[in-house]
Image (cartoon, rainbow, N blue to C red):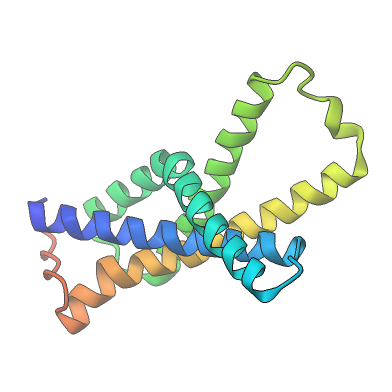
Length: 161
């Protein structure tokens, strides 16, 4: 892999994290609306930045594994990237939940509350949707644009043994 392709993948990962953070911010804002439009936009931009950083940290390892596998196998199907994005998002959510359980004094105390179950189901749905969208954004920037529009550097052809 050359330096130009590494830069392309880094830009694509950043765009995918921004897309996932935007979906998280929008989902949070829908769940807890503000009183005015200006406050809603401020909250949306804040939560987009916050959740984008959250996605960068918690989804880096699962997404990195998917990116390496896709690059090694020269996969260029958008369905694979969308599915891998959803899996990476859910793995990132699992890492976050395990971290919270490890550092909690009473890790399973909240599991008896039905509101926690509903909130967890909502979080899982948002994370899966955001991961799917992020995977599609990653595919668009890393695969489709270089191959079709030649905006970024072209992707190298797979090597035959």
